[in-house]
Image (tube, rainbow, N blue to C red; front, side):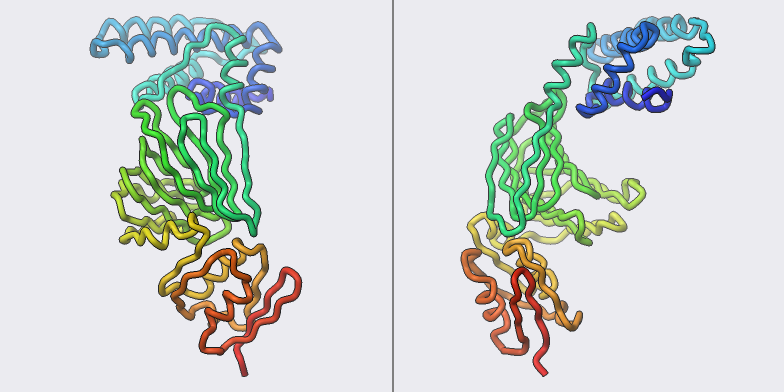
Length: 346
């Protein structure tokens, strides 16, 4: 990690308190590699301190505050560089702007007095990962802030051992039910592959499997802010979701559609049930693959479009479930180990 662009990104993420455990170790190595690196870093630290003092003061940002901060930037800019050093002035100016923007949006800049504080921050960003395998059942965990999360089958949640002072961020692939503990000073953020959800304290269900075409977020109480991204990572849609609403997001385009929520259907898996109403068979079979850890194959893609309504206990055998779904007897089923083959009767 010696390229200037990479170091810039590490320092930016450090000041924003978004640096990963691995990147934090790389930044630590860079700082200890050369005394000039530490000088460079702590010059930025002094700029950040001036910014923090100005923006967290009980008084409005004053002209004197700006002059004090500008003087610090100018002083740094006068440092001469040699062939081995960075071209400091444009980079300090860029960092100062980033730090100011960060403070304005409320993230703040943490107090860093010496390298020892890296270790405490690294500990705060130690992440755990829990994965519920295909065929698994609801798994409940309590996060360090007392937020309750229930994970469905084929779901992975990545979360820190303890949250930072500014936010509570977790990463989800799959389906989970959240009861978020209220904390006005630290928003709770759920990052999905193509969306992110920001809340203060609320109850909601997320169904966002990274390999599927659509994600759905159902709000049961409170309010959430939802952003959706396209394949390039650009924000395409932003909405504030109200209770008893479901946002359906296209994971390719980033576009969203909001519709009324069905609480009974949304929460059925929490009671070890699978309920669906006028659901295409293709979607039903995807869920059954997760619940029973099987691979289901169709001889005719048109079968996917047939809609069904039903309620099943997840304790039932999957072949019993399929036979009940096909109550009219239009399909044939063949079960071989983990594979199930479905065909139209001829």
